[in-house]
Image (cartoon, rainbow, N blue to C red; front, side, top):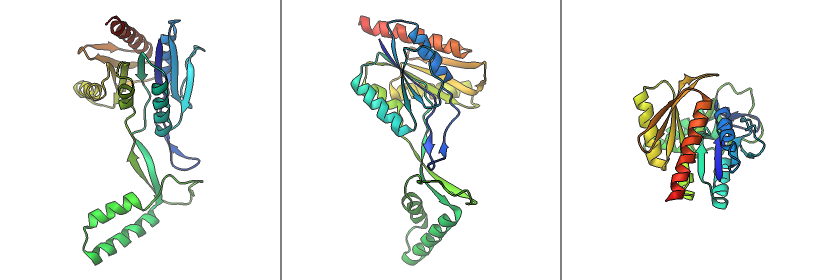
Length: 256
C-alpha cells in the first residue's frame, strides 16, 4: 500500500540569501505519516520542505523540496512513476512567487517614462503602466540585494495549484486536501472546503481556521464527499481520523 504525504511549507526566492515563506511546520504531516506507518503494509513517501518536521518512523521515504517549482516537479515525477493508493496533501504551498524586485527610485523612473510616452502617443495610461510593471524586469535577483535600498518593491505572480495535479495524474487515488482560513465563520470555512473538494476531486478535506490552532490545540473538521463532517480537537485526533477514513476508502475501492 503506497501513501504520499506532503508536509511543511514552500518558500520562494527573493535573492540568493532571502526568501518568502509561511508558518507551516510539518508537525501535523509528520504525525499523519507516522500513523499510516503503524501499518506494516504501508509504504509512505514524505514529500516535505527542507525544515519540516519529519516522521519518527525510519521506514518513511523522505523527499525534500524547496519552492513550488520543485514541488511540482517532484509530484509529477512521483505520480507518473509510482501508483499511490492515497495522497494526503497537507503542505502549505505558496500562492505567489517573486516575479522581480525593484527599488522605489527605479520603479518611479520607469513609471514616469511610461506617463510621458502615454501623453505623446495617446495610449491608455493604465494599460501602459500595467505593461511596464509586468514586463520591464526579470526574475528574482541573483546575488544579494543591497540593504542600502530604502524602499524595495516586490512584484509577485500567482503559482500553479499543485492540488489539481494528483487526480489528473492518478484519478483513482484517495485524495485528502487541506483548507486553512483565518478568522472566518464556520459556514464560510465549510463552503471553502467543499469548493476545494469539488474543484480538485478530493475525497476528504480538512477544514481549519488559524484562530483555532496553537501549540496543543488544533480544532478542525474532516469533511467527506458523503457530506459528513467529523469534529477534531488535536493534531493526533486529526492524524487518527485521516488514517481511519482513508484506509476505509481504500478498502471500499478495492472491493469494487
